[in-house]
Image 1 (cartoon, rainbow, N blue to C red):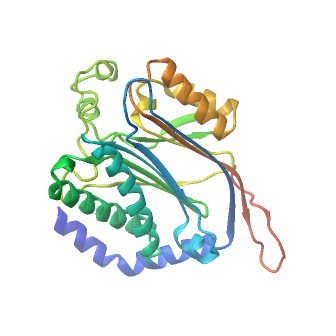
Image 2 (image 1 turned 135 degrees about the vertical axis):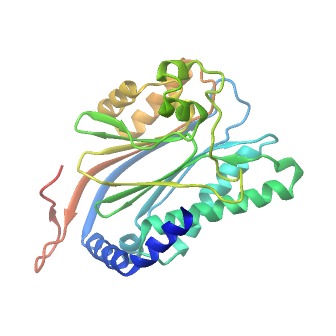
Length: 296
């Protein structure tokens, strides 16, 4: 299977590079206005916060056109504050590696940067006794022009609210989700399963990790919500949708975390919401920007 994927990639390299060059060229002509809101909270039970969020918005137009804007969230695990260290190292390493990579192929850069962070955390966990077993989930969102790319490892999530409908774009890498996919248990049974918090993939657990990459085309009015399981275990999608529709991204992030706390706040809780306010394209031979038509 691995050999087949590698052979296919080599055959399609020229075609893929040409496609990505066209996407990068198009991204250079597009300006996206967005609004960001984010909050992380200790919760009502835990003694330290192992969640972490980060974002990076390039000021350089060439970097923005090539790599886009990065938003990420991680939920660490491990004793002796190892989870907190893992989540922080993961996000900072992925961001640095992603922007250091000059490739215009976003999916390739995301995969390589997450893999690099995984190897670093794995080596640290094996080199320091107090860090043994440390790891983290990772959910990352890149917005480049009209494109959105999501990288996923673990059970943190990315949702999209569009035209009044909310959808989970990522798949949980968890034992219960795998059982649901196989038809062994129902979603209702999963909610009460004693293995609910057992994840099957994480950053740092092994020398390499399988990374899910999802792509999307943004529309005006879209809202992307990244969250740790401290939110998704306490708050359902309908309540997430209501919060995002009723307030700004910042207000919605605060309201959702308060709701999770009211439900018991059994875990650290982190929410990052990005709302697409406008998409504008520079028209040929015209000065300034005009409203992008055709979507939204």
